[in-house]
Length: 480
Image (tube, rainbow, N blue to C red; front, side, top):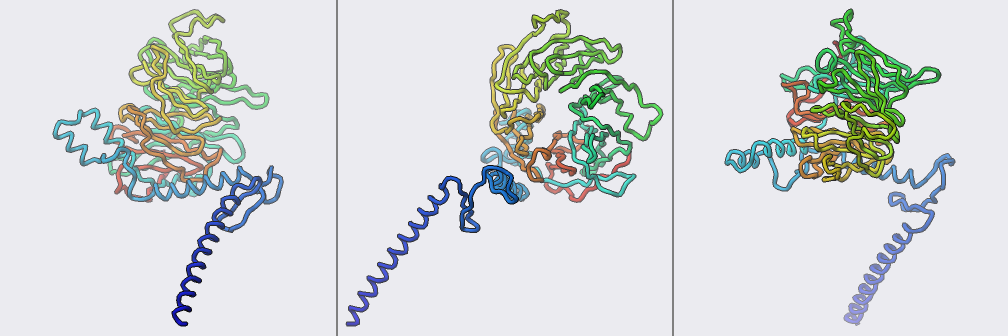
């Protein structure tokens, strides 16, 4: 009898185990069906479903856009925590500084390849440090969001444009200091300039010497037309307030882009890209030449070896203008070359060879073009853009390409083989008004500067250092 009871209880346990497994599978199946119910969203944390609303009129809406943003923020936070960790994923399997140094000593690695690969290792391990921006004439911290930051050719100074809360913007120059002590500090000039107009584009200009001036494209408002201002960099220094240097303003309607020519054959010449035309201006005489285009010109860059201007348009066309040719008729015969991408061009960058050009568009495509055959030879995958006006940054000596996407991630590629080396999440939640601005250099602060990435997002400034032992808590105190 006892044996029979034992067998019966064993069968009961076996039957209970099978029922439990069936219930578990059934619940799992129900959960899957639950997720797929049209018009509903299943919240795994609350273990219940909610109805998706078609719009944003409800006081507590639950929409697909809101859920997607929540998931993206969750992903960003996780990646940020991972990125702040001491160990980073190597860009290439088995690649590290020690191995590269051994190969170099054995003669197995050319100097150029060693330099490129060591930069890849270093950028993959950069550590983030927050820099507190302060001004000497005020104890209050900076609360105005960065709109643009543009470094000069030596990366000794950064021209900044900040949006102000009451409308318009302010602009000034930050100077790097303290680089010889293996620490980065920046002095923010006190004499910032304010304008009630928006700044569309900025570039450094060499009028009296290298990077002596800054060229700004200001958007017109109300009855005031747009203009292009040429401001001396000394205007933002407290050392020579009485001798600011050459200061000009050109009456040019709202310009999307600008570029300064460094070729001696077109000395002191700059260009502006407008709606369906390009204006090339002599900064000294004021003489202008107008070239008609088929679309808005959103990006420009001059070649260095010849007075040739490359332009990127909203239509996706990329074309060049040789300033030595005098034919500027409506036949567009002055276009020395032109080719197309599939969407609006947001940035063009010539390589040092000047036979190759990088172009980014509003579909998130970054392509390397061989200008001689008008053909794309490389494409860099991973960039995200849908409609934003976003630049790309080329650091050819280091073999790096950088771009900040509309998703607020900063991506670094190997210029040589298109490999995505690192994806850096933004320290702030993603948004239209919080896309980071970056400056990268192996010499931030000049010839004896520090390597790394400078990132401005919202009203905060961050330094991504090559050195893992870089000291934290540095303060940027403004005093020019």
